Each structure stands twice: as structure tokens, then as C-alpha cells.
Image (tube, rainbow, N blue to C red; front, top):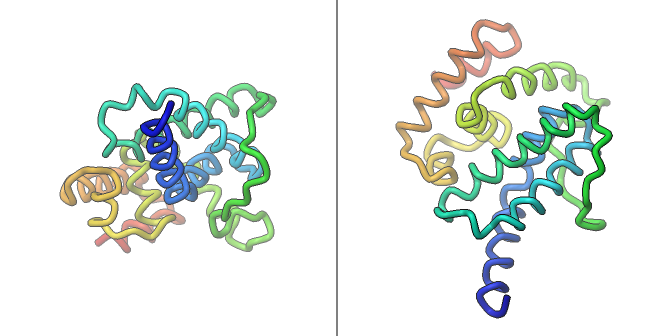
Length: 176
């Protein structure tokens, strides 16, 4: 690949490292298992890298990777989690806060992630960034390459779709 290939690998590694928690959160929300989520996230990042030439808009890399992560996670869940995935070695990544089953709010968090993963991908991504990654609307817009108003609309629609579930209601109150 030469120098251009090295630049692409470096850029891709930086994007993945910066957003790994987001991708892991998406996978965990689908799979509810820390090891399976880590495997799914790594598999998604490998698949995406193999198809990096298909990416026409580099600014859209985060939503693209998020969608790939979600699809890989859904594939694994559909196949009963028995799918063999490729690993990246012994890389240690931070886990999302609350992913451990020992945490008292783990059940509530799992229920919230289930509901978020039922949303359309653009809405799920905005909710995940806002409440699980604790980004502001402006930061979400920058990360996703959308306008702040689009981010607000997606968040509002997502919270409306999530409805009046007691464990979700707090999210809507925070967004106001």
C-alpha cells in the first residue's frame, strides 16, 4: 500500500481508538455480554477496514462504523453468539461504565440499551452519544458530520419513540 496505505491505516486506527467505546456500547447493547461485544466490535472494525476503499465520505466514517458494528452484533446474536470472530490480539480497551454485571444498575442499563437498539440506527447513534458517551449536541453534530439541529431532531424523535418507559423517562427530562 505504500505511504498512502500507511496514512490510511494511521487515520483509521486513530478514528477507531477515539470512538471504540461508542462501538463497544452499540455491540454490548445488542449482545449483553462483554466478551461477545468486544469480539463483535473487533470483527466490525476488521470488516470495515477491509472495505475502507468503499467509504466515499471520510467525514461519515463514525456513523458508517457504528452501522457495521450494529450489523455484525445482530448477525452474531441471530446465530446464537456461536459465530467465530477474528481478534485483534491482546489489545485492552476500556469498557463502558456499568457494563459489568456486578454494578447495581446493570439491569436498568441493559433494558435501556435494548430499547435504544430498537430505534433506527441514526436515532440510536445520537442517543448513545448523548447519554452513554455524554457528548453535547454540538459534539455529536461534529462527530457525525451533521448539523446541531439535525442532531436535536434525531434525539427528540428517539426519545419520543422510546416513550414513557419509567427507566427511559429520565433521558427525556435531561434533554429538555
